[in-house]
Length: 155
Image (tube, rainbow, N blue to C red):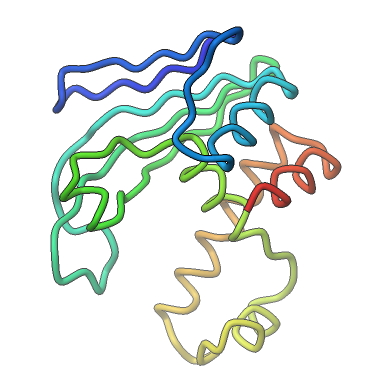
């Protein structure tokens, strides 16, 4: 299995071979092992530099990621941190996977608002809730509950 990161902006491709990968942190190593153990392919590609979140004051690098497992695909966008953007860093698989597993919430909209301190009358909160539900559904198509639990342990 290969682990590839592509970036059009930076005109580079990073590829880590299974036998001798390089890791920037223990978290990156754990994410790599998760991908390897679940026979998952991960790729990420630069899209643009723009505001990503509705409340962003500064622009950041925005990427499109794709996760493929057993012929099933989940993809989406990922907004790099402002610090990572300034350093011209390409997000790691750990960065993307940890953000996906951090949003793992199951329950009603009211439960979501109560848990995370949102106003249940807020349209913004409802949009965030719907995005989290959609993300959870996408990840559940790829991974079993046991695999999702292992993914959440990486954080």
